[in-house]
Every structure is written in C-alpha cells, then in structure tokens.
Amino acid sequence: MAFDFKKEYKALYSPTAKPYIVDVPMMPFVMVDGKGNPNTSSAYQNAVGALYGISYAIKMSKMSGDAPAGYFDFVVPPLEGLWWNEDDGVITDLSDKDSFCWTSMIRLPDFATPKVFENMKTVVAKKKPELDLSSARLVKFEEGLCAQILHIGSYDDEPKSTAALEKFIVELGYFTDFSENRHHHEIYLSDPRKTATEKLKTMIRYPIRKKQ
Image 1 (cartoon, rainbow, N blue to C red):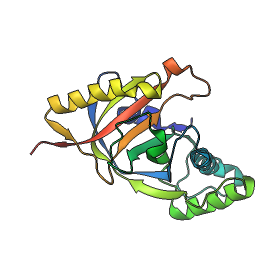
Image 2: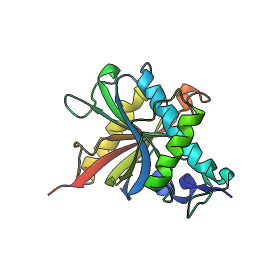
Image 3: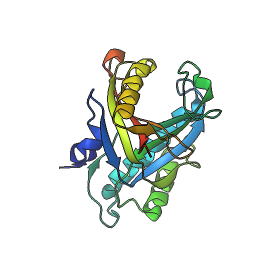
Image 4: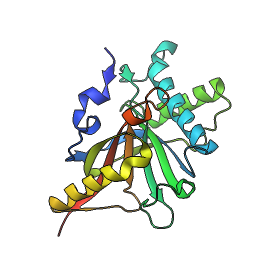
C-alpha cells in the first residue's frame, strides 16, 4: 500500500469545523513563489503544474529502475498555499486578488534529497518543456505552533471560518503570529475541478504564539 500522509498524520490533514491547536514539524516541500490573482495568473497555473509534475516524477521514479535511497511508494499529498499581501502582510480583502502574494507547495517524502529533487526537475523538463521549473525549489519548512480549522464552501466565504479561528485563538490566550516567514496557510483537500463549490474542503491554518 502506498504511504498516505493524510492518513498517517491526521492531526495535520484532517481538520474539523471545531478549531484546534497543532504543532507542525519540519517537513520537505517543493515550493514556487508568485504574485497575482490565482484565478487568472498564468504564473499560478504554471506553479501548480510544476509542483505536481515534480511530485509525480518523484513518486514514479521507481519505474525507471533507479529509485532513490530510502524510496517508498506514496500518495502525492494535497496542494497547499501560503498567502499574504505585499503591502500589509495579512490579506484582509479577498476581492483584491491581484494584490495577493503566494507560495504554492506540495509536501515531499524525506527521501527527496536535493540531488533527487534536481534529477527529477531534469526529468520533468524533458517530458513537459512547456513548464517553467526555474523557480521550483526544495525547502525544509517548519511552522511550529498553529491553530487550524476546516472551511467548507467557496474560497470567497473563508472570512466566516477565519473569524471563528481568530476567536478561538484569542479565547485560549494566544495571538496570531503573522510575519515574513509565517502566513495564512491553506491546504486544499478537494479538487475544485471535480467538487461543487459549496462542498469544497479547505484547511485554514494560522501561526500563533502564547501571550507573554
């Protein structure tokens, strides 16, 4: 059976409508940075293509007969995104999508070393020359203490869920801790191409810190 990160790390990938706190460990990700409206930006579409291309190349590397050391079959984890506003950091106006800054990313298994990563970029570049892979990078990312909640429905309706999350954070004696390296984080648990808008499931994660 392929290793499924969502099932093995349920605290990280199985949120509920009731918010809760989680300590997110360091994990390897393939990441691409960009700016602009994700609904219309060609850069965002390229980023998503690059992320999935590299992730599936690593998964399927066993087929070449030259699997990396420590290889195990795995289910490619869901797409994730860090979101912020270039001017004031935290996004407060979801309608102004042209001002969004983002990092799109997908978790990778630990055997995806820098050498494996670069080799797979070369493989994808040959198979999909239309993709720009130049900005795709391998990053060890640690979020630390966070609070998260499940949002069901349109992405534009997220304020109702973030309001509940913020209320929970304050009531437990914490602060949101947005910074240059800690952002509004979303994990897309549904495929928007196959799921009705009102049934979309998105995990929203906020970095937090304890009140002094």
